[in-house]
Length: 431
Image 1 (cartoon, rainbow, N blue to C red):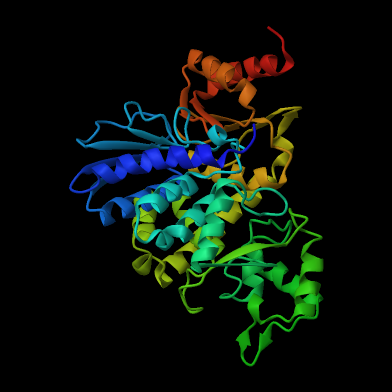
Image 2 (image 1 turned 180 degrees about the horizontal axis):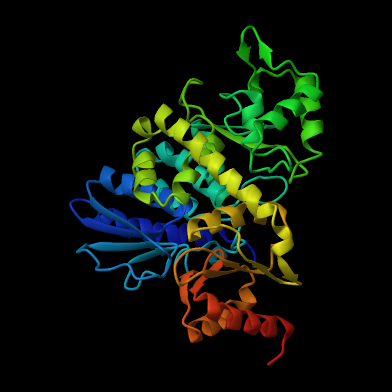
């Protein structure tokens, strides 16, 4: 399908005009999936409706699982979910989705970028949330390709953000909090890219830096990434590539232009790095409040908490990777047993990372966890099998938690074995 920007503009115009008509003194109800991208999209629309004089209720739920009673409202918006009786659906079948306009479904339109397109039409200051939209796109794996650039609808937002001069773009070697924390710490905290044998170990990271001849303490303080000269950056990059999950360490970086370098939130992947641990901790409303009022949210308390939580996640991630002999890989199905993963948020976090550099893409992933009687999850990015697997899962008592970008199903761990066998037959084409 060819890209049709006129079709996209028409659809966004129609949605935006309806929202603008109903904004003043009206009640909006936004229901979104519990992903950072969904939370970012909700924050963008929340700020937009409040600016227009509306009253907004926001709720985050797990995909299509029961969301309880629906509050009284004049206009209902569903983000990343089916949203029965919703007036507007974003990022889900029947609503505003990238595939409606000829864009690739998984990597060319995040929930937050589509929300920003609507805001651009009706807000007097749309540029104030561009950094949220871009952060949401990065969190949704929209930059998963090797060049790590945002494409499609996401790229439209990038171009507008650059034109507004609120966002700066450059190609650089980028590590977590690389301009803030000591070099060895930023390397050891990196999980995207993941450095095998280095991520999670500051001591090993320090040894790797020392092997390049880089002096780690200068003038009585630890050196950070931004202190390095070009030849030192080249030497560090050459060494890290030996251990890296990515073949390309220098990638497109986005920086907020309207804050000074002493702020914790001026690099958008650092913002992402600060918020993702909160997603894993299931603190959706806290993330929403931070994004809705960023001046109060990105402080030292969140910074240090993120460092602590990230260390815990990396420890668990390393544990998962070290039990790869427990993986049963049968062509397109991979089953993970006894990983120590405790809940859906952790599973999504780790699958997202592995998806960027492992051969899990295009496969069904079944992971047993430690969470209650429903202990197995099924993830799928093969759209041609989605409908059949959903039908099979429901037959075995499974609950569909999310359809996009991956199919996720809760199913009893005993029934998971039966579902596993049925998926194998589907893939093999055996009745």
